[in-house]
Image 1: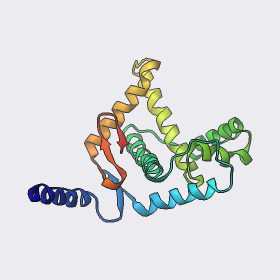
Image 2: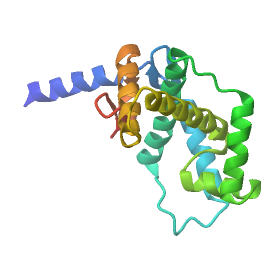
Image 3: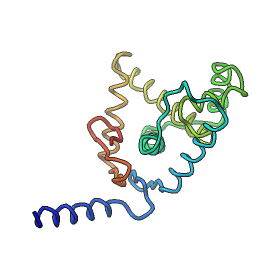
Image 4: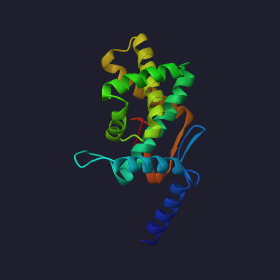
Length: 187
C-alpha cells in the first residue's frame, strides 16, 4: 500500500511538472498561459451575467476552462497549419466574414448573444474569424486535392493530428490531456 501511494505521489508530481508553472498548454513553441485562459473564462462569465441564460446549455467549471483552452489551442494549431501551407488571412477577408456573421445573427447588436451561445469571449471574436478562415482555406485545399466533401472534416482532423505530432503538444494536467488520434483536448 505504501509503495502504491508513493508511486501515485511521484506520478502526480511528474504530471504536474509536465508544463511550466503558469502554462496551460504549449503547441510547439507557442505557449498559452493559465492567466490567458482564466481571463477569457472570466470574460465569458461576465457576459453571461448580462443575459438570461437559464434556457441555454452552457459549460461551467472545468468544462468551461477546457473549452476555452481547446479554442485557444486549436487556434494556435491552425496558425501553424496556415504557415506551413502558405495560407495568408488578410484583414479584408476577416472584415468580409465579420459582415457575413453580423448579417447571419441579425446585426452587430446581436453579436454578443451569439458569442454567448457559442461560449466565446467577445475578445476571441477576431481569433475565431482567423481560425475559421484558415479552416475554410485548408478544406478548400483538401477539396482541390480530390478529397470528397463528406471527408473534409476527417482530412482537417488528420492535418491537425499530423502537425501536433510534429511540433508537440503539452497540456497542464488540470485541463485534461491531448488526444493525438482525435486531435482534441479531453478530460
